Length: 193
Image (cartoon, rainbow, N blue to C red; front, side):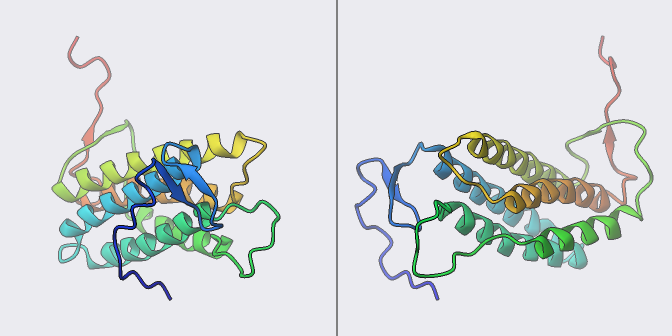
């Protein structure tokens, strides 16, 4: 169980932070950037949930599960698997979490008309907030993929799959809260030439 009784420790005043392994890294380190951006995506989902809580309770429940999983993903990223014994089993994203998000995507997507154009970010306030969360999740994915390219770093491949699926889910959820796509704002190529 996590217990936080002191919020400031002053240990980060030198620009470093501690990973779950106890190792200190710069706050600008790509691993810290990865789990920080996952946290940012989670915060954006929290803002989106202000619009989904009463109007779309089934989607809100899906978002709630994703928020919890994103904390799992942050914990996964904060404890790199460098092969050294930790004395405990670190929390890792697993395939069943990705599978659940895929099932939620399929459930929402079967109610949507196929797209004939790209969707602009907008429509209802809930959709706009979900699109913002989607773009932040995509950024987290890009950072995680870049981190995984470093031979000195290890990134759980299932975590990369999971964040990819989350951004797909957020796109489909944005369309679902846009009156199942009927209120989507579609891109019209060259419209303002």
